[in-house]
Every structure is written in C-alpha cells, then in structure tokens.
Amino acid sequence: MSERIYDLVVVGAGPAGMAAATTACQHGLDVALLDEQAAPGGQIYRSVGKPAPADTRVLGPDYYYGRKLVDALQHTQIDYFSSTTVWDISSERVLSVSIGGHSRTLRAAKILLATGAQERPVPFPGWTLPGVMSCGAAQILLKSSALTPPGPLVLAGSGPLLLLIAWQLHKAGVSISAVLDTTPSSNYFKALRHGLGALRGWRMLFKGLGYLVSLRKAGINMLSGVTKLSADADSSGRVAQVHFQQRGHSRVINCKSLLVHQGVVPNVQLTRAMDARHLWHEQQQCWHPQTDSWGETSIGGVFVAGDSAGIGGALAAEHFGRLTAWQVACQQGRLGSAERDMLARPVRQTLNRLMVIRPFLDVLYQPAVEFLLPVDETIVCRCEEVSAGDIRRFVGLGCSGPNQTKAFSRAGMGPCQGRMCGLTVAQIIAAERNVAIDQVGYYTIRAPIKPLCLGELASLVSHGDKQ
Amino acid sequence: MQHDLMFKRLANEDGGTVLVEIDGATFNARAGDTVAAAVLAAGMIPSRTTPLSGSSRAPYCMMGVCFECLVEVDGVPNVQGCMTLVAEGMKILPQTGARYLSMAEQEMYS
Ligand SMILES: Cc1cc2nc3c(=O)[nH]c(=O)nc-3n(C[C@H](O)[C@H](O)[C@H](O)COP(=O)(O)OP(=O)(O)OC[C@H]3O[C@@H](n4cnc5c(N)ncnc54)[C@H](O)[C@@H]3O)c2cc1C
Ligand code: FES
Image (cartoon, protein in one colour):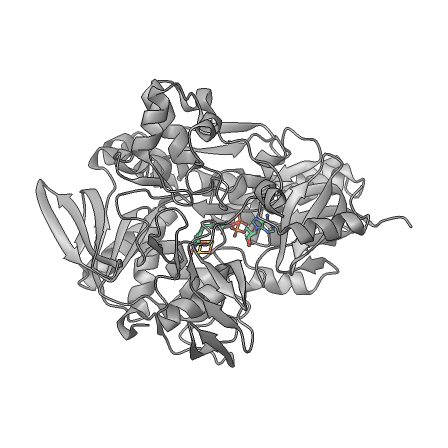
C-alpha cells in the first residue's frame, strides 16, 4: 500500500499557517494543516470562529479580522487536523503526530512550521505563586471562555501586548488596580536611534500610544519605571501582594491576580529538535531559525513562517505565510519562478512596511535585566524547582552551558522540556562566564517534543506506521 | 473552593453547558472550556502541588507551554488541563505531588 504524500504539511493554524495553507491549496497543492488547538486561529485569533464574549467591543476589530482567514480555509480542499500535536519530524519528512491520545504519521514533500510564539518567561521572586499568570493566558481565557481574573488585579511588565490586554480587560468591565510598566527608562534613549523607522511605521506606533492614552484617560493607575518586582503569598499560599520600587520608593499593592508579560519569543521546539541552524537575535533577545528570503531553513524542504521564524506580528505572519506557499508551489512545479516573483513583489513591499518599526519596538521593549538575569532566590526552572542561584553555583563548579546543567540538577528535564527556563538558564550562564550567549548555546531538544504516554508510542510501532 | 478565587464569566455567546465534577463538587462548565479554564472558573486553586517541595501552583500560560495545569482527570494523572476540553461527567481533581516521569523513566519503572 503506498502511503499518501502531501505536497505540503503546515504545522500551526495561526495567521501564517492559515494563509500559507490556503494559498498553497489555491495553486493546486495537496495540503494538510495541523494544529494542537481545537479550532484554527493561532494565538492572536484564538477561538475567532466561535468567540466566547457576547460584546464584540471587548476584543476589538483587530481580533475579529481573523475570521476572514478562518473562513477562507473553509472554502478549500485542505485536510485540516485539529487537536493534533506534532511531536517529531524525521529527516525523511515523516511527521509523528498525536491525536486524542493516539499517534500516527503523515508524510510530506515539503513542511512549513508556522508554530508561532510563546510569551517570554518572566522569572521574578514569586512568579510561581497561584494567582500569578501570563497576560496572554488571561487573554486566552477571555477569548475562549469569556472568563476574567478575580480582583484586585494588577498587570506588570512591558510591551504592546501588556497594554492591549489591559485595555481588553478594562473593556470587559474588569477593575484594574494598577498597570506596572517595567520598561527601563534607558530603553527610550536606545530606541531613539531607530526613531526613523518608528516614524515610518507611525500607524503601529499610534495604535500602541492609543492604548496608553485610553488607559490613562480611563483613570487606571499607570506606573512607569517599575523595578525590583516580587510577589508574596498569604497564608493560603496564593498571591496576595506585589512589591516593587518606583522612583526610589518601595511600594506594595494588594492583589488576588497578577498578570505578567515581557513580550513574545519564537517557538523553536520543532526546529531545534530537527537540528536546524538557529541564530541569536540580539535586539529581540531570543533564538530564531536561520532562513533564506522564502523562509526555507538550513534543512532543505523545511520552511518556517510567522512568529516562529522571528517576531514580526500577526499581519507580517500572514503575508510571509503566502510567500512561503508560493515558493513551495514553485519547488513543486506548480508555479513558474517569474510568476512567483511577480506575486511576491507587492507582498514583500507590504512586509517591509510592516517590519520597519520592528527595531524601534524591539529595543524599546527589551526586558529589564532583572527579568533576564533574575536574583538568586528566583525559581528559574518551574518544573524541577531550580533557582537562579543554583544555576550560578553550577557555573562556579564548571558548568559551561545549558546542557551541562543536567549533570548538576534536573533543570530543563521536566515536562515543559525547557520552554520556561531555556532562555534564562542560557543567559545566566553566559553572564556568569562573561561570554556571548551563542557560545553557551541552548538545551538539546529531542523528540518527542511533547510528553507522550508509553502506550502511545507502542501503538505507533505496532501499527508499523513508522518506518 | 473559595468563591473569591473564582474567575468571573462575562455575558457570553451561549455555548451550552457541560456538567463536570471539580474537586468533588458539581460544576457547570461552558462547552468549549478547557479543563484548566473550568478549574479557574470553579476556584480550584491551587490546582496542583509540586512533587519536589509540595509548593502550590495553578495554570500559568493556558497555551500548552508551562505544564503548570497538570491535574487528575477521571483517575488519570498528568493531564494537561489547558489542552483538554471538558466533557460531560468528567471528574477533575487537583494533582498533589505526582511526578511527571520522562519516557526513559517510565520505561525504567514499568
Ligand atoms: C498568548 C499570546 C497571545 C497573543 N495575542 C496577540 C494579540 O492579541 N494581538 C497581537 O497582535 N498579537 C498577539 N500575539 C502575538 C502573536 O504571536 C502573533 O501576533 C500571531 O499570533 C503570530 O501568528 P503565527 O501564525 O506566527 O503563530 P500563532 O498564531 O501563534 O499560531 C501558531 C499555531 O501553531 C500551533 N502549534 C504550535 N506548535 C505545534 C505543534 N507542535 N503541533 C501542532 N500545532 C502546533 C499552535 O497551537 C498555534 O495555533 C499573542 C501571542 C501569544 C503567545
Ligand atoms: S497552563 Fe501552561 S501548559 Fe497548561
């Protein structure tokens, strides 16, 4: 029996993956689209096919825009697999996927990884307490379940998403005790160097400033220049107070919910597991896979698009998704290179316009050092409870990189497989050794990239699916 | 479960209700809720304690990254609550201390 080989398997049904799959399908390619969520949309357009809040003003028009992409998907012949997690991709482009506790394989001529971003881990003393959550998590609860966190509520961190989510919660009628802005004031001067880009990307800038002005106008307590963030629990072990310094004064605010955010970083679990080449992005302070101008990685036939290739935002993700689809169509002999380039030209112009503000935003919202190199008492690896101080001690004992920490502890070996500590551990080690972060590297990621039960693997092998 | 810890439900598009049991009490979840969302709405916080120090935790990312939402569902430990939709009759319990075993370790102990 000859197994079906898709022309293109797209992993991730966010804006990048949806646009790529639809475009590839329009050029006659046989396409499968896989996503571990129950419905298409990705992070920004989460649940947009069936949003939970009745009042559409809460999430705003930029969210409902995503409907267009979801609808387009429905008018195609794409094989869409929901609630499907890709946990391995072999060098022969066989994808191992888990669907409802069972594993199977899919084969592809070309693969596009459009796996998006995750929020940057925000380590500070107390971030593991129940009641402390990422801003994105609160937004997901709002989009998918119309749930809002119990008050008193404080938001803390830096970046455009912090302000957007504060605004969405405010529109939802949630009372916000304070928004603590941890953006270091020195970032404003550093970012000015990229001010020209900011001016050319003024539309985006205006939107960001708009949230800030609206939040202030709404009378929300907006505190800037916040440092030394920490959270304390009450006797029940739940977050009760947030402590910080502002303009030289120590301050405390009571809270039942504390939402934190320090920007987003590419999800590189699959490209790492495949051993694709990764580069350190100094402005964005994160790793991203190396690609050519069409998104093809160092592994031929494997592409990345959207935030998993480097943070560019939802619109850039959508446009870049189309570019990769045209290149795949060209490689598969469905589109001439002249036609491909003609299609790509206006999209590249749009992308340039969207990306021009990026260096300014990236530098402005670089996390404060206290979140990159947290104080000793901070838990860094949440799964195995390893602290920043532990990592520093390991370096003193000769630990030279993230993989060596495993000789000293279980850091990075818990179920999250380093997603919550990898960046921090690497940055602490680099700082302690006084070397560049590319010299210390990252955890070696191995399949399965999501924990499976043994039975699941056994079923895969016994079905003789896996070659 | 404490009332003041519960996440509040806004006016929402009627998705239908799903009856589940959370920490022994009956709870009306909204169809489309994940187990982690239902746990937060029911105020089952903390939803787990860590195997090492027994410290309290609750869902943190809601998108499958952090594994803080591990709970026991219908007797099965280590269920990733934010990646699992509620289903009628589901019995959800906090996870106290159970260790998540890596595949190699599972093999060792099986
Ligand atoms: C929690 C969160 C909330 C955000 N909210 C906003 C917002 O409101 N506005 C905004 O402008 N930007 C937001 N962003 C930024 C966001 O990253 C981008 O704007 C946009 O979603 C990027 O699109 P994408 O297509 O690259 O990836 P995404 O939209 O992130 O889509 C990636 C998809 O890949 C799937 N996936 C990942 N790994 C696997 C796997 N192994 N197997 C199967 N499927 C997988 C995921 O389930 C996801 O659906 C948010 C980011 C995060 C993390
Ligand atoms: S809450 Fe983070 S993985 Fe479920």
